[in-house]
Image 1 (cartoon, rainbow, N blue to C red):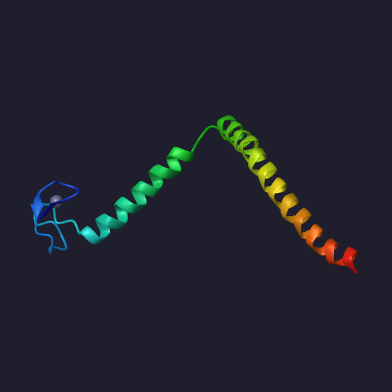
Image 2 (image 1 turned 135 degrees about the horizontal axis):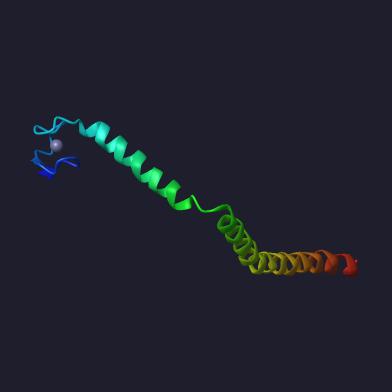
Length: 91
Ligand SMILES: [Zn+2]
């Protein structure tokens, strides 16, 4: 047993439609999914200035990550260069 999302009437879980308000639950599920995704879009519907400041913050937050990636690739690259250089020097 569960409740109709529209009128909160308790209905059998096997029912396709509410016996009280007659709405179909397949459509209800699709509608609530659309409604929840609309809520997410509304949550992201920031004023343009807020969006710009958010993007700037994200960019600044990405700089340390980029530094770490650059450092790691430099270390790996340097290590690879050493590995390649050692046999060349031994020859
Ligand atoms: Zn109902």
